[in-house]
Image (cartoon, rainbow, N blue to C red; front, side):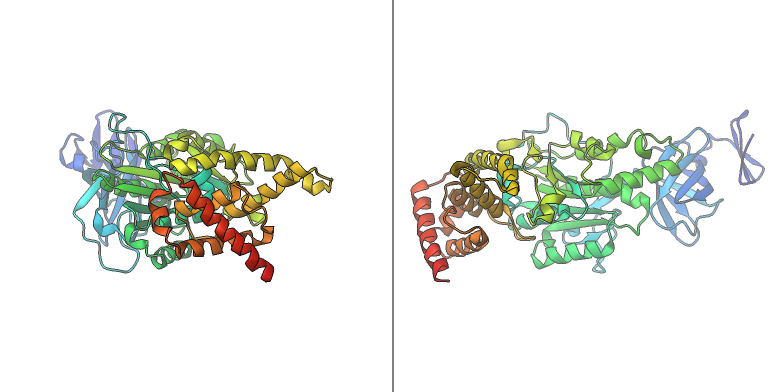
Length: 510
């Protein structure tokens, strides 16, 4: 005989449930659909009954004041345990629990675009209620291998250092990793802004962030006129661990609705480090054995089942995932970073040292890699990327000599000057993505020596004035259409030479 809270008993010999000394056969249909709360602690509800319930199934707890939603996360021999998504202040032992006979699901549809919602689809932007009749299971099957095709269509971020050296394609999983305050979220927001005017929808999942940070990001997207094609799913630091745990899965389920309609979706998970921490908290409360760094043994599966849903389908739909991982003092060998690195198709590594030197975005060209590579890159920028990587690598090798005050030969000095100018060209302001054809032209200037006669301090001014000159040129429209596939060298050489000549004259007059 096992006792729960002095009222509930399970007679293990006769397999009979006793409630207040009233014996009920567990095969009785009522108790296959209705359970009873036996204990509530730290957002974890212990329940007896519900003998046919499934892992991940939704439940409703009838408190008499409100209906509290939860999800089954533990199934044991004599009880089940569920996590709840809101406050547990009204939940008490003895209250009824109803199963909903459906796995965890979230509302989806076009009505979510332009809105800020919690993982359950409830609006957080104090706007009109969301009306949608479409729901999608959070743990539905991932696309099969047969239904996928190779990643070959570029997803342009508008950032020169990424589009040229670490290209991202539709359907790819590219990790953004670095220490705190190094610009990880800024890269993700720039990528969303650069999708304005394209057929790509955006989903930004904020996990464990401050509400003010989510509001600031929403305000930036609104000012850039990008919010109308974006869904913001927010499970902030003030929300429960259960909400933070389901947030990325709910955001992905919302994106799969659009992917299955043949549309392209970009999902940002910001960030999965806090997601793993919330799952560790739930697992320890559920009495699951801790492993390395206190995480449960299935923490790898936690992220792999999420990121494997990023795919480029044969039906033209796709989900591109940009997960963000926060490291501590650049330690990429920690448990969660190594897990996610092994799952994704490459990583964009941000260095604190570069950020401190004012090189922003602080992307490390040596440590960042895209395993899709040039398959998701335009022909023109693909040709330039090889020379760019080579010259930057050579510059990094000899950069240390400049700090020693040694006398350098002319070839080394020229290599350093070219590397400094290339590094300066790759510096870019926040929330200011640049079209690919402009990136191609400015890289053409830097790689072919047109900046060698420009003072290093004037490189930024040269770039800004060149873009203005290009916007007012008759070649702006033709270049924006055709330059990604073919570089008309004679026209480009004439245009660049003409601008550089008059820019030098203008600078001398200053």
